[in-house]
Length: 90
Image 1 (tube, one colour):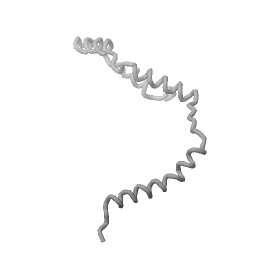
Image 2 (cartoon, helix red, strand yellow; image 1 turned 180 degrees about the vertical axis):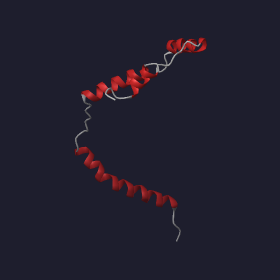
Image 3 (cartoon, helix red, strand yellow; image 1 turned 90 degrees about the vertical axis):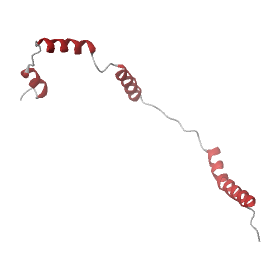
Image 4 (tube, rainbow, N blue to C red; image 1 turned 60 degrees about the vertical axis):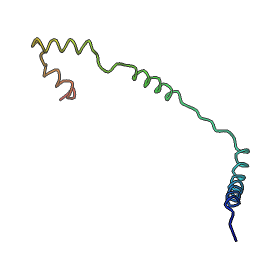
């Protein structure tokens, strides 16, 4: 006996189609899905987009500080840095 590969592939397609029929019936009777986005999520998305548009490097500030460093005029205020790093009542 010789097995015809064409016949076997047709049998596989028929079996697959029979398995999908019950799923097709369920889909026709189900309601459509709805997605609702909260106002907070929409606001967050808007703010996130605006934050991405902000330039990370302030070129004017970098140039000013670079010139101060070159001239030896740049001074580090340790108290100011400490105040920003430590809690207010430290």
